[in-house]
Length: 370
Image: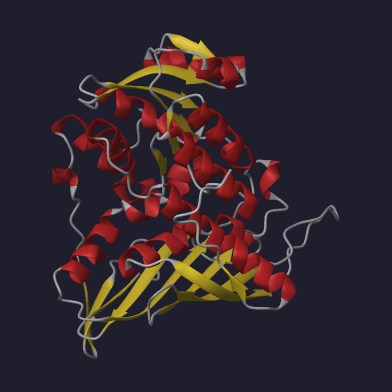
């Protein structure tokens, strides 16, 4: 493909954060937006000057002018919409997680294999400036041999849509799992997870089965293990999506407070480090989006953007990787196989917590899932 990739975005809450990035990207053209709410659709489309507008995802997929769709809908829709888009001959970018069941992870992998189109899970945690810094420590050899990894995603979800209320914490754990597996260049093989505490509702309604879930993973074809903790409600903690990586020569630890800087240890001596922005990895036209949101007023920005401090400048990097993978006809990072493992790791962890057993994480590679 030599012309610009023509993209349609579905879901205009968090999805709106990507509209002007694609509009400014030299290899992309934002041609359509889709939102079930007509009022929200018109408001956002008018704001950004997008002409093609759909309230039906199915109708959007019939548009021959669209090469790729970027899905930003509630998590229960991700698998069905990704499969439908791939079967319709569209490339797919999808916000996390890929799915909420192991079976649906397999369905998405199968659709990607059948279609030959590219699928990318838009995992912010592996495109943040903090991740790039740690990745450089590993790839340069400064860290030495990785010995252990630890991640956490602790977030108060009060005020979010109601469908979050019953979600097991580990079903939305890719922000904590992904950077660990990416740094280790490995996949999760098995998991032993425990649940802790409970979520109380003043009105007596239900909630997630645990306040916190904490898991220990073994990695496939590796001597490494990693630990992941996830919470959604009723845990007193500043929002954090963190990762720590411990090496034989150097270790990197996330800061306790957002206003602080990460710590690097050389032996027993630690020091806080300044993280560069890495905008120079991007085309000039979209570099500014690493340090600001897409709206001109903070009150318009999606809650995930403001709570997550802009997701570490990851949004333009994600868009650039998706567009570049299509133009270069190569697998994006993360591709369908990697996304399935990162997502399935959390789902398997919840199964382990409920069953009180070690649970295997499916290996999706090399198998045609239909």
